[in-house]
Image (tube, rainbow, N blue to C red):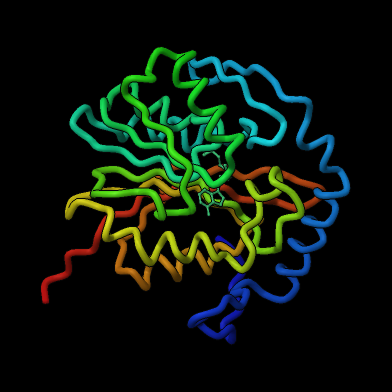
Length: 247
Ligand SMILES: C[S@@+](CC[C@H](N)C(=O)[O-])C[C@H]1O[C@@H](n2cnc3c(N)ncnc32)[C@H](O)[C@@H]1O
């Protein structure tokens, strides 16, 4: 998995990288280059067919990538008809729409108003608007109640985003991801599950630390390695459940 610096301090209130300095520096350099090529990365907006759904994704919303299927297929395999589902950071609405093929009660939220509008239109386009409610929310700020399944593909990097598109990929000091893990249990039923997508182009040890700190049991259910700019990046879909250790 990711390179971990054994001397790294466990972050308390703030965030301190838990990957080695060398790994953190490599991610930072990659972050700078991604922004310099940002226009190409954002693209003009496009219509894509993905796992049998048609999605229109505007330029300021996260596109479908070569590894999106690792989470999308896991959602299709995991979701049950009786599940109340939350898709945190829905982007184009993709995972909410996939979840709605089985579940009738899906809430999709995003901080990006462009994503909220795109997800609504994509839910209509795929005939599931009556099963998917889309809301603007900063993490759980406008989310109420408990869910049987929460899906989250968080921004991987921890630097300040320089525009709305970049906010899909970078979350300053992991403020949103940290808040997500601290509040997740309050929004899960006792037997609730979470599907989380993350990769080694982010601080994976920090995510594992947050999950562990909150007492989640974590298993890897999908994995793929890709060569990126001469660097191998591993992507994982994790399935998290609450750890019921006898007390
Ligand atoms: C990596 S993208 C994933 C998008 C989509 N779920 C997918 O799989 O294509 C992360 C998403 O989280 C959203 N996001 C970032 N910070 C957020 C926050 N504080 N609250 C809610 N959503 C947030 C971004 O706008 C973006 O749409």
